[in-house]
Image: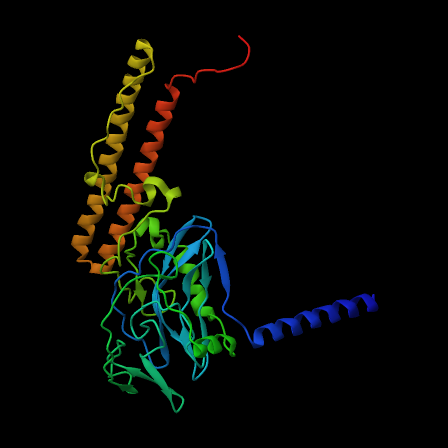
Length: 366
């Protein structure tokens, strides 16, 4: 038993050494995404107020959820730097050989390459002009970052020229940013650095677990575009003012991905009746009768959902809710309406299939 235990201990020690060696000069993580389209444009939003000294801004970006085959928005937020002198290099998406790759962000003494993506708030595609470290303290550039000088005194004001603004969310491919890393940026990725801290991972998981953050639900305009603190999706929340561009639905999402573009059932067009053509007059009549019954039921379900949403609108009015709360409710209403449309579409398709004429047989013996 002693020899077996010693062998296990030796193997574990070798594994730890190998892991330590790998982490001493890490490179940004890459995750190949087997889809042929990139994330939606970056939404337009304002930066929440910095919560305190030592917090650094980490821009929002689109993550990928393989469980739902959908992008989801990870709100921008303020994070305490893991070490004095460290900056955050944001993650980015890049097109390469028929697929999109995700390059994770990291903390380090130098800003690395982040795809040339214009995340705003000091991250305008290259480097970072939102602040600097001096004497063990981070000094905030008020021309770029939203800081309350009554609470934070280590500030300065340096105007930054930023004339060209775009909301492209990926590098390479058709329509992507064409930037390439400089030698200094490549060196930063090879130098000592650390990945996202625990608070960032919790923030990411909270976004992933919120259905309203999925692109198919918010259509590129998330109700929670940024937060004052990581993982807090209630206080200090900033909604997107607008989508950064036209949202293109994932082909596998169908109506749920936004084919209707309707927020409430009242926004939907009337349900269309299909003309029966089974080749049998008796079946046509039966099909028409069942279709009328189904449409009546679906219309009633639309009305019921609309009444429910109207009650929520009235409740918001009584509470004098702020714009962030209203935006959250509207995003939920859009998702509810999309789900109802998908359900009704499937029901009508199933009814149509039951009355479709059987396919003609060809070949074989008579």
